[in-house]
Amino acid sequence: MVPLDKVGPQTALVAELGAESIDFIDLVFRLEQGLGLKIPLARWGSFIEQRLEGQDLARAITTDVLREFAEREAGLG
Image 1 (cartoon, rainbow, N blue to C red):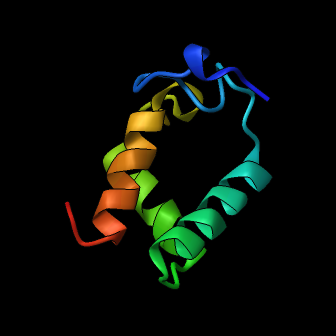
Image 2: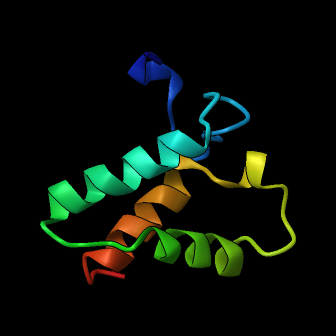
């Protein structure tokens, strides 16, 4: 577990926190539970491909990007 004081909006989930593909599956599942929605996993992949095209995903997928995805799925963004 990573201490909360080590996580900020620009923290890279892969490069800094060591997230793996299974962690993203879990994150999408948790978003589904929290939002009460069904989110196809492919939608996360499409979002990342479009939002971060051409970037180093290990560094580009940040907590802020995850927040942006969650807000979009919740209809807020």
